[in-house]
Length: 237
Image 1 (cartoon, rainbow, N blue to C red):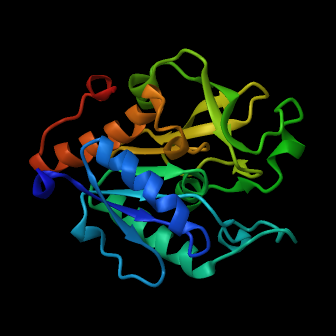
Image 2 (cartoon, rainbow, N blue to C red):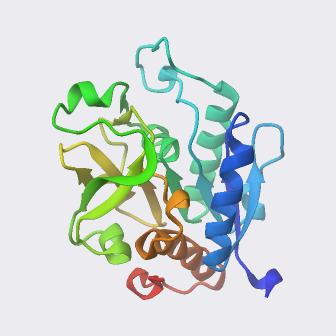
């Protein structure tokens, strides 16, 4: 079956990728795919894969969206350039994309949006969390791709971010928010499949609804390979 598994390119941080990639690869494998690790020291060719995951870690340079540099920011301009290129190439070639935390933010920035660099200063009713445990509640908007995948019941997720989507990029919509109204997921309103979640589903692989996110990505990658259409509701695991 190995050769039949859709290949999913996964971008990671040079600093933390060694511990993050195995979790994403495991989630992709459970979903029926095979992950290929990419970073700035490895050649990345979107034509060689069937889908893309842009992982977390590192802050996006504010130069990309006319923001102000924050002293505590950890930047990797080479990674910014790599992921921006891969995202645009994936969308142009009709290949599905999943953005995780920073990846959701990069999806927004690549399509012309910007970020709140201190999101909790903007959303005072959002409770600050910094944990891989599911301690934050998000609500998914009905009638969206994400709702097809995970349903609309309140969902507990983790949180490892201080930035969040501000102005939306082209063809994007906010599809989940936390209790204080802070954006927690975005998706593209036109094909191909492009979803960004502010939390880290790879740390929650034991949760059915989090596995369903990876299952939807891999199903979309497999469908694109065969020219079929994906029914997101049918891939929940």
